[in-house]
Length: 368
Image (cartoon, rainbow, N blue to C red; front, side, top):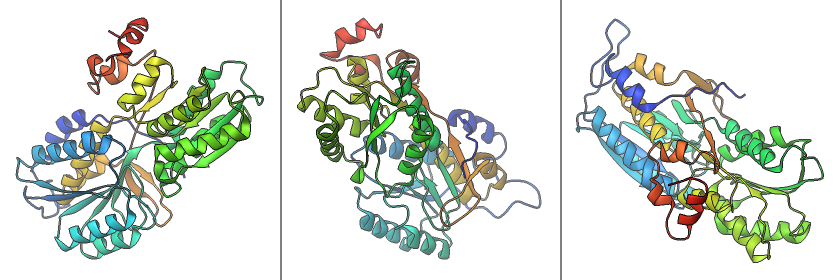
């Protein structure tokens, strides 16, 4: 069941929670539980390195926030699975054996990791599902409103097609990995907007989200539909959008169809500037990572009031119901609002985007 998303700024949370005991001060009253001190160890399990966000944003921000919240006494035990579910299971088992205080888990395979989540539970180690909703007895979940992501992508695609868009317009859907529950939600959100308005001429669940797999899938779609008969491509993320562009260009397409994306990766923003990609979904990973660290520290230190304030939403997984959650909102980025979104938020500088061949194209859209 889909819930209502809430928008939370991590910086605002830091200030508001500091005043009511978040930063190393226990809750008052009979309901407060004994707390652990600042010497907390947060286990952070991330899924892969192909998407640059994990190494560039998630890990360093979680590490910095944990240190800030614990007066530099807390630490982060970090491991990246490199898209290998078995490797992640071993990494999680090691964290359980090492007796970390809490685990932030971004699962490679949300179903396959469930036994390890249960082992952590049995060992008294809370698990917070981070970015992807893992199965098993997790204690909380933090991510973005994933169905909203798909809806925003689809609405943008329809906007690109114009008011005369109809079922004569053939769209290719390049969805994410079937092992990622987020991918299913992105797809569901997109289909809720596209259904009956355009024709889904071909659809793929892309193995491991890999750009090369998306490129191969797109090549098949072009052969099936015809390179001049594709009105738009729904791409669930930016990495795959890059592979889609390559497939279209290799097929001799000079005027690219509207292509969506997600993650606001730098190459994608540059493709938007050049007109190769229509949009991307901007998700504030700094806010997500900082809030996740706050949730982890609050949980370990027994700050129930603060933890509840951070998890005012709830979600259901295939194995558990009413999981406390925080769902963050998202923004569509097009050529019109690059400056007021990713640049204004400090995600990128204009000098990062407008390099080399992109300088003149940036100037043409007022990005300078």
